[in-house]
Image 1 (cartoon, rainbow, N blue to C red):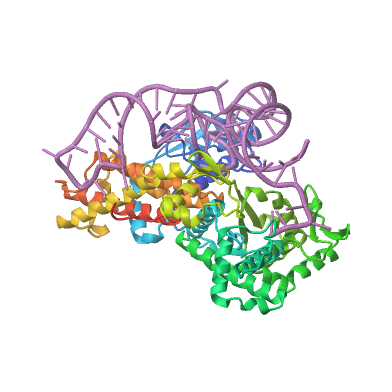
Image 2 (image 1 turned 90 degrees about the vertical axis):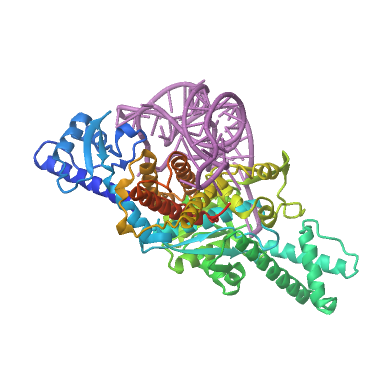
Length: 561
RNA sequence: GUCCCUGUAGCUCAGCUGGAUAGAGCAACGGACUUCUAAUCCGUAGGUCGGGGGUUCGAAUCCUCCCGGGGACGCCA
């Protein structure tokens, strides 16, 4: 399922066997084999794969690296395989492997057999949860949420292909202080819109969207809520508004190609007593102490800069307390790996969250928090503040409207989460024709066009067993095959390092190789029918791989442009 | 002040756990369409990898100090 990894594994074992043999014969002296790599060299002259073990072993073995490399090469048993053309020692002591192109001719079979599953690495047997966006349900989705959504969903797709069992989760912050403020704002708007002269709370949600929500409430309830006790009225207002907001958020994210498995309510953690439970537990374990009437978690025990309040002096738990209970719940649900995507402004919470997990007896390494740097929004060179309260923010819906889902998702995922992202809407619109996403989609559409053209000529892609892939000998053809073969391993690396942007890079590279091939060789109308068939096959597996990679990114693969 | 991210070609950014001669797109310049979509391709030019020191056989990558940019430091979430 992953040809590159199979080759790497084979070469790694071959080198290890040679080392053991050399030791047995007293040629190289060492205690244990260091962690070496089989990697793809940058320079083609250095072969298809290179191994650095000789340099790493030099000190331990007290031998020159090149000498070690030569002994390894001599002791390597390659009699069972035919695809290795040459092995040489080069540079400081690299062992370079030169492969014949034979192995590439097995790639089409694999891709065709797996079809839309090509890229899948096989069941890893581990459950992973990705929690992302988790925007406050008191407002619209902004650019930061959009970036988090694109990143989280793509990462989840990558993990799935890498072989994990993945669940996507949205944590609904439907409790706490912000909900109180939200309630105050709704109350004020309701009273105002029913003809009462009341002031709007100073730090309330002043956005137009809150007004709209209250108008809907009035359509629904009229002014009947005025007769209710304030407490009860407030409850109805908040419940209605949250429901409306969450429905809206869910729909926006679906328009962005994101569908969650679980929507987890913070409120349920309070209602079920789980928040109190976890605080009590930490207290029993001596991780919580009282100071100034509040309860503090000793996060400094776990490398944090300062302790953190879990229970305020007014007796209410903090967001952090709920978050501890939430993450405990995640692990209790049996996830082997828990990934959160947070904005960089939350970086201060990482240490204490991991500390809390340790205090609860969970391995903090099973919790990964992927921090993404914030998005700054520009319009025509002027910065747009992303304040939820003023209502001047550009929403996810507006973004999709302006630049399109495909371009938006590709744009956000193209960059490493670590990079600060300046997003100028004017520029994005102006450059939408040059956007790299079109370059990739165009490659896919072009291939589809070849097949449409073939059909009108009465040409069909024959079954695989009637095609001889060895007809593919041109450099552009072989490079394309090689790139296609890389896809599963790219998925693997992207999953392991939580780097979904690698897939954006990959698909750009793949498209470039296709365009390059397309411009120098013809597929159809070739006098050599066997070559035409082989090229049709190459086009077919290129199309499959392009589409699979685009699907991972949440970008569509149009058949026509 | 402490902590996180960041500084690579004119601009926007890649560079997998340290590997051999640092890459791509845009912009610039010069070429390629009677032939499967020119939203494409080919070529040229463009670099003290912010700076100093260190570790290493080997550093854009790791450590340290300094300089610049962004962000966080609340009994908010």
